Length: 224
Image 1 (cartoon, helix red, strand yellow):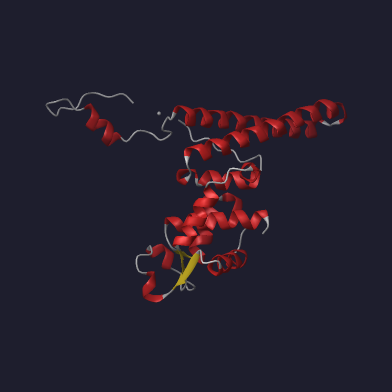
Image 2 (image 1 turned 90 degrees about the vertical axis):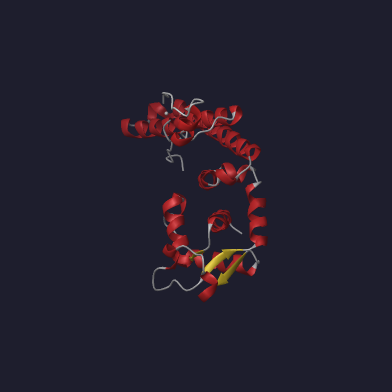
C-alpha cells in the first residue's frame, strides 16, 4: 500500500467513525475538512472503499439499512450505498490512531493526523507533535545552511522565495511549540462555555456575579 493510499484509508475510517456516509458525502468531507485530499475524485476514493469493505472494516448498506443516516448524506442521484464502520474497522482505526512513527510527522500525513487529534490519546499527540517539530527543525537548519552557501548566486526573487519558505517553517515551529506546551500543562485550547461560566459565577442566592472574559486558531499549511 502506498503512503498516499494509507493516509486516505486512515481519513476514511476516521470520518466514518463519526457517522455513516455515502461516497459523495464522504468525498465532500475529505475535500472540505481535510485539504490534502482536495484533488481527490470519487474514482480514486471508490477503490479504497472497496478494499476496506473486502477487509471487513466497512459494510455497504442500502434501503432501510440507512435509517439514522443524516439527511445530507442521502441526497443526490447516486445516494444508494451507505458505508458504515464495523467493529473490526473501529478497532483497526484505533490501532492506526496509536501509531506515532515518522510517517505521522510528514507534510502529507501530519495535517490528516492532526484533524483527528480529538480522538487521539494525549501521549500519542505529544509524540506526533514533538516528532513533527523535530522534523521541521532539521529542515530549517538545512534551509539556512543552503541559503548561506548559495545566497550570493541567487537573484533577488529567488532569494525572497527562499526566505519565504524559511519563514513559513519558522511559523509552524512556533505554533508547534505552543501546542506542545499546552499539551504538557493540560490547558484546554477551546474557549470556555459561557453557560458553564455563568453557572459557576452564581452565588448561594442564585444571583450571577460579574465575570471577565480569549486565542487565535493557528493554521498555515504552506510547508506541504
